Image (tube, rainbow, N blue to C red; front, side):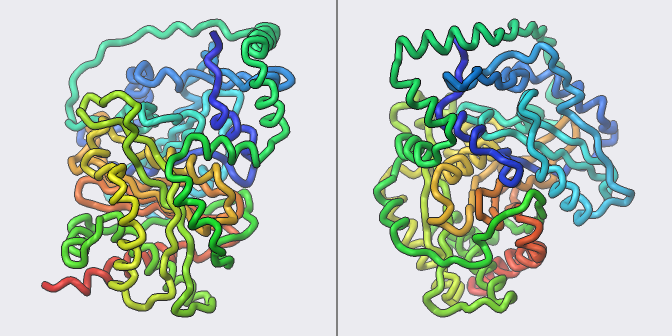
Length: 468
């Protein structure tokens, strides 16, 4: 039986274009170990672990005439050196040069004729560091149980021990005739599928949104917020093909101090930090900001899913739901901004369906890339006219992780832009740090570096309100 893409995954492929590539990314910075780390060592590590992610040796086969949704098929000509690539900065490479390289890499769509992922080893970083940059298409990460390629190479120890070699034999790729035959057989069994596939083939955006409403929870509350008009300004513009990338850093202990003093959750503090930074950014651009000005954020949240089986860690399975929140950027007081956000987010927490940060960390492995992808998938299914910015915040493990003996120092998410969205912000906590990745349109956000600095200033502003 054909391993067919879901309706939502197929829609993400159909709606992708040159200005809005649908891949999630990550930038992980490592310290080079004394034993060394090079391209050959990385390829060997990934080859040993690809058996853990069989989807990463599969490509998408489109059914002629789009009689049915595409199917996943083994790539009989799989070439790992096409997907794992080597790049370098002029020594000593700076963080700014790395960010510029990341922006160029993220601007390019993935090749749909091959498995939909890439990983870059970036050498030449100053202070004996290197970076791994990953790109994975949304369609590859279709649930909590999915794993992003960057996760499989990380260990909790610098010496994880030897692993058995696993032989991979690809299944024969189906012929065009076989794809059509299977599609016709499914239509005979499920006639409604034909109508659905015709809609997808016509790129019916309304149909995509309808599918999303069928799989996301909390729709009533979301619609209540969505019907209220939102601010339209420099964050909602026609985007180009090119990107800019910037980062910001904070300490998790500092955000927890703010939470302890003023209440709410760490996620509330993160959103308050973003609100403060956006306020400063709007003012720096000469935008009109009144006491009532708000910017609407799509802030996907993990919720409990009682229908899924328990994970090995014993927690109830979870899924990601879309959540809209109006950020009070017009409010000058950082404490009042935080209190307003905490009040708005409390309804979700009071529902009893929210998943605590520590439970998310226990999902197993390094879950943040997967959850960022699911959050971006949730946002991509809604009209971008109802929100201004996507903010995904996913807690990560608070212990050091390693790749072939190299310690990971930092990890920055790269969340894709939706149509008419000038910037998206991904946030991940790891080993005591909190890391913000700002992915922006190159033309609309030439000052995204300023926004990154304003994120760090917003953290300091909140921290200054904490009694010593």
